[in-house]
Length: 337
Image 1: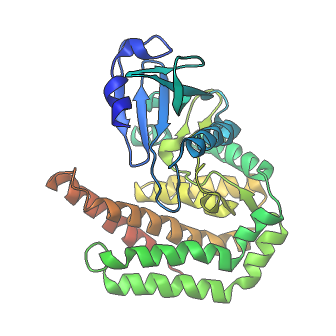
Image 2: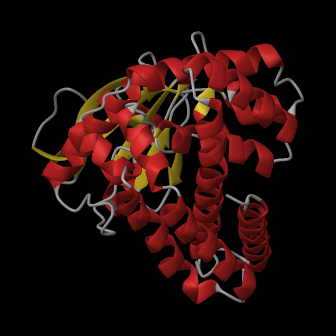
């Protein structure tokens, strides 16, 4: 991986003409950003819930990323390119010399200006734009794949794997980013929801509301291109993608509310419910449950970053405050049922 970063730092080495290359790393990817295109290479890591440790697996998940994201962004996700190595030289493209050592997902570059988050921050997230989002997501959820295997993930025992995992992983941070009372209250409320609403989980399954969803639906992944595009779904673990459609949109609603967009969140939810033909009473019962889950996950993910040795103290404090805000938001969603 280090070799790729060191090698692909010159614009003329890429298959598409570009004047500049920026390189961004996440814990699972290296992203090469050109003038008009983006090339994403998966790191050879295995975190249990995600396994890119072999070349064959990285190839498979590159094609998974391409095909799954084409459901909502077919004009953005273009193809998968092999990366060849010949001695100390690398080639990214359909053809090259030497052996294939990796794969890259090739995408059109999207301007930050068209992201839902940017539009919201500019105060331009109008009702017509919210209706456009709701229309696209309702149609996507209605048409997304379902099956007996996918529906199984809507059973309380199956989804509880996710929430149990969250509580276990956050335990080391109790007292730092979340107080013990809030932690125990959220955990008890979540577990009681499973016990008291088993019939509602069954109802959602019978209504075919458990689908192959997006899995990571927040404002930075919704792009006001023509037509509207939704990018960067979860490709690496079906457990995070096979879910109730309300769990999917709850992430976006929670994200709006985290950024003080409660009014926009309520408008989006009302339009979505109508277009998705949701049963109002059942939907309103499930929405806070899945908002709690989504906010808690984001609090957890931020908590993981606090001990990152590559960040400075200012960044650490910002991440700490973000985590606390997410956990406080999760607690604010608790309701009587």
